[in-house]
Length: 438
Length: 139
Image (cartoon, rainbow over all chains, first blue to last red):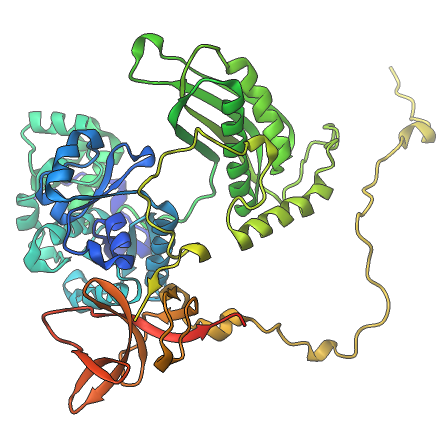
């Protein structure tokens, strides 16, 4: 059945030889988080909107049933919202991130190797075959629901790719109650009914090509000749085909150190003045510096960029400027100075800016000091300013973000994102806790 | 061409040395050193399981349960439902405080002496949000 040309992947490390992968992912995660703290949302059509309340980024099953597609701009479904009483909420990222970490903590307590794949998905590695994991999966589902209120689906298979497929099937078939353990003997039958475009890792282009070659199901890709797959889809495609065959090629990934950090936002109202742009850039730089310090890193380079409305093509203007930094730094005021200096040449009067951002790159851990003997010591004396940065971070942690801010950020900030319908930050802000009565 | 050895003076130019910004502790060791214990941490006292611990604010005073308006309530969702426990329940889509009481073989949600809902009623799943473990108040 399989061709004899053995791929190098078939001599596997011990850790991948007999293993099972589980993909645990939250159902309609953002909506689920909102429902935990607002019982009135249960059973209702709910959507969560992107920054600036622009598009739909999450839908409850009831909203899906109304035909609301993912990523649809809000204005297109205004009438649906009004007719069916759809609740539209602005995204509440502090809440979602906090809940995501709680789910992750519950998974971590299981004592198995774990990889956080996204805000609402995680892979775990088990040592039992898939068919023996049904009870385990049920216990995990119940534990997460009890401790966090978030409903999850569990897909289990011999490889990450098969686990992902099992997870999708678990979600869509209600009789499975959100759990599907894909045993080796069921693989062929399951993959026969699984469309090629839904296979994890197959992009639009590859899909078109494969369909053109008569490969329309996952089973057909699994049965295709490996050298042919390697030739047409590179080694990455070959890995996928092998994973579909139950040969694990993708192990759990370790969290990698960030190489760059970006803070950017679209403006609720378009911004025309340099003053307002400066305020925005100073604010984004402050946030980026906080993230740097939290990650215990310094940045070598800073880049500022601005953009006008992408949809007005005739007048579209987009530009970026690299701002040199004398020494790797995590000091907010050094970064703000550099960023504002970089912004000046980018500004064109008469344009209405829709988006701006700051990118910090060339990140390195703080302990590695500047190794270059010939670079002058930082004339701003970064060492004595560390206590100042630490004090500011501590005050903001204790009393709420932005208690202490830099003057350059401005006080009115009329360009901030619209988030009119954001729910309270139930788990990250003392002033916004859920309330309970008699 | 022959290279002459460098004169000693030229071989040792000015060499910058790091000046340590902090001083070194010297002096006598504390007699209490060996007995030093950890600081008292309220987090450890109040929170057993961080992932399942949440905070609620009491919207009103509930005399019978000694809860005052604005009290901070610590909730642990991981605890089992048992008779005698004070809990946050969901009734009519609202968060309410109730006490679990056992009557015969069933558990009930009660408030101010009145027996209200039957717990584990299959028609209304997940009635209980979590168990209240502590009540915190600034005085």
